[in-house]
Length: 304
Figure 1 (tube, rainbow, N blue to C red):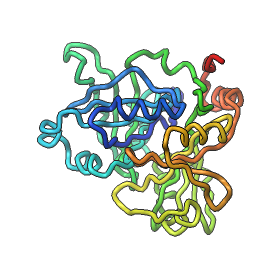
Figure 2 (figure 1 turned 30 degrees about the vertical axis):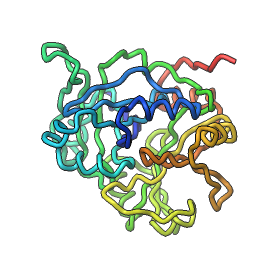
Figure 3 (figure 1 turned 90 degrees about the horizontal axis):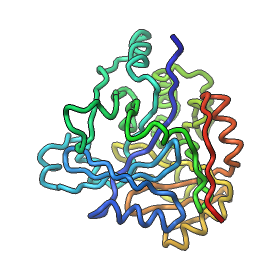
Figure 4 (figure 1 turned 135 degrees about the vertical axis):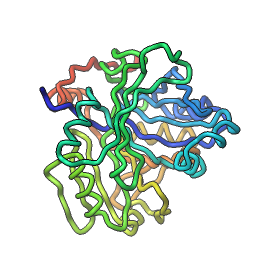
């Protein structure tokens, strides 16, 4: 049996809005592609999606506050009060097989769950197979296999009007960056950890994971790090033209600032995302995905 593939799939945050459509509209005005699909999850959530297909950003919004307060797990309720990225979803083509392989090498994991959206009848097949990975400190992490809403949605990639088309990786912030990096790499069974005075990191396929200290975060990005349960600091997007991307964000009243290394970052205050952009051509990214993950994706570009 082939080893199940694994990649970073999406980043989760709560949006400080009454309706998730409000948050999605502000992303769309900044040139991002947003999904028409709104996912309803118990207890009382309506979630929207920013397309970086096949990856994405997930914006959680509490639609039924009474039910959420009564039924949500403590960790999810705390995350809903902070409006900053808190979770990382990883995609596997076979989460059950991945569970068995990781367990065989000593990783302590719960059994995978079969999940349904709140709108899916209990008699229908599950929408997802999901497995928490509790040993990855600094983020709420899980692995999933999706059967919903349409497998074809994971067979194409799109270049947005602001030229953003992909997810490059994540920077996390910790007082112990090297140890965090080593612990995560051990869980994933990943070799090739790099360590320096300023950061530690590794590649999971094509996605880069970096860990830096709070002092390094402030040095690079010009803001003090606010510690909390989540250590997700910066989400690295891929775009063909960072100038166009940041201009469209600025025109949509996002906060865009220059960093001390000559680059820029964008803050989205309603959900706490901090975005850095790495320039790359979509065709090159598509070719790399085919080489590393065996994906044959159809590339879509906006009409001119």
